[in-house]
Amino acid sequence: MTHLPPEPRTSADDPTAVDWHALLAGDARTDAARSTDAPPVAPGFAAPGEPERPPMTRREAREAEQRRLALTESESFVPAKPSRADRRAAASDYGDDRDGHDAPKRRGPWGCLIGLLVVAALVAGAFFFLQGPVSSLIERFTPAEDFAGAGTGEVVFMIHDGDTGSDIAENLVDEGVTASYDAFYDLLLAQSPEPEFQPGAYLLASEMSAQAALDALTDPTKKLENTFVIQEGMWARNALAEAAIVTGIPIEELQAAAADPQALGLPPEATSIEGFLFPATYTAEPGMTAPELVQMLVDRSFEALDEAGVAPEDRWRTVVKASLIEREAGLEPDYYKVSRVIENRLNPALFDSGLLQFDSTVHYGVGDDSVVTTTDAQRADPANAYNTYVHPGLPPGPIGNPGDLAIDAAIHPADGPWLYFVTVDLDTGETVFSATVEEHDAAVERFLAWLEQHPEYGS
Image 1: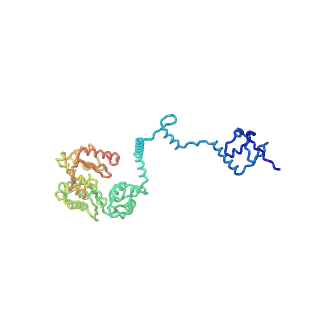
Image 2 (image 1 turned 45 degrees about the vertical axis):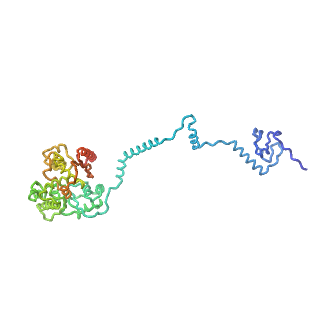
Image 3 (image 1 turned 180 degrees about the vertical axis):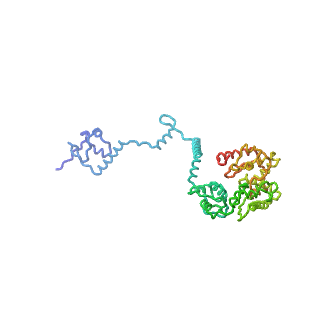
């Protein structure tokens, strides 16, 4: 027979029952369900002792599960922690912190400028203190400047008696053979055994590599027999010594041949052949005697003076002045400026004392050109006839043998008001010319400071 379904029980009848109709309708759980810890009853089953409830359809079960999850999430929701951006925005909106203090303000343009200046000062200080060590480190690991190959043209290079490897390295650079002192000298130090150089003239070239120059200077076939070089400004005694070494003529015979200047055709004022041994490359013929050799040197000097347009009666003064220029000037334009300084100082209207005050003349009178400065005692010594700090006018004779450039400058001085000059850098030849003593004193201070950093030049 057919039984009617039992009457549904309400919450009033059973406080533990679940009102599924209310749950499916989306209502919250009954108060009785919230107040009990009884485990939930699966749809379609009854709790123990209770009649079985009608089963839920699949759709009703799925909707009930979705509502249960939504209810659980709503009860367990915890607000998320605000982000840094949110906190920054809130702070900027309120302008005050929780304690009532003013919030930090943004740095203004003056603050930024001060910060930049501090950074710039730190960078500048670091650069100043690190410049020296960094430069030294760079130089240490940077190869010395050097040319490549065997060079071009011809250069007659002279190794003088007593020249060291350092002297040769310097002379090679001065004559345009090698690119730098270090390139040749470092190479020389790396040789084992160390090469031995023989005095004499060698046929080299311009812009040779350090290795090519070293090979040529140690190659006997590159040595020119009976050939020697007289350099600009060289003293006569040193020029004769060079000739003696190369030609084999005893120095005593050459000195005797030079003892009578007038017999050689020199001006009557000449007491020696100083100034009239023209700087050039010479080759002595086999069997040449000492008088023939000396005459050849003097004749070459007369030839240069004639080509420069110097009359015989003007030879003496021109050679004396040119010898001063040769010893005092460095760079080519300075030759003509030094010539003007000499003329201005010898002009009583411009410089009443007439004192040239040249250290080079003092050196010649002392007989020592190994240093570039003079002492107070040397400058005050009247016994030195070549002391132009004491004796006015030109010195009594030439102080070396001038070349073509010095001779031309002697007869064509530059225009200018200069009365003073000083070479402030002996390595570069930089020279400062001044019209006033104040300007000159400032330049002298520069030179003295340079000397302190380069004690190898003497005092």
